[in-house]
Image (cartoon, rainbow, N blue to C red; front, side):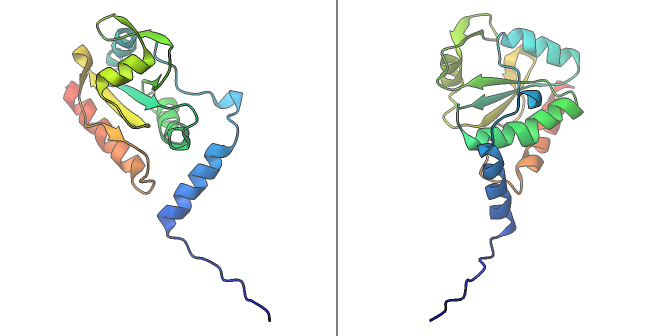
Length: 161
């Protein structure tokens, strides 16, 4: 008895997600770089505002494939092409940083202070360290992620005046 192999048709969004996950499994090349790690949020914010932009902060988790896709396929290209000021804060990291008030804390403590529970989460900050657009939580919607990100960036930029 011969069995015929059946080709399984996946919905387009599932194919995109699987392609993104496959790409995320590849090693990160040194020349591709990454988002700068947050060291002093007030300083990062002042630099962003000086360019007329909000500060975009991606909360990431080491080893998270969805974080890698959001970072490499969306935030890094925007950072390079549109000079989008973006930094990364890592869940569970003991690395120290200064918050918007200048207080030294770990990345993990800052993530908890913001009430972030899922990675990736992208936050948009304006004057005074105030969030100026709705958070972009998770990355399980590959068909629309870019559109959601652009929508929030437009909202954040408009909030800056």
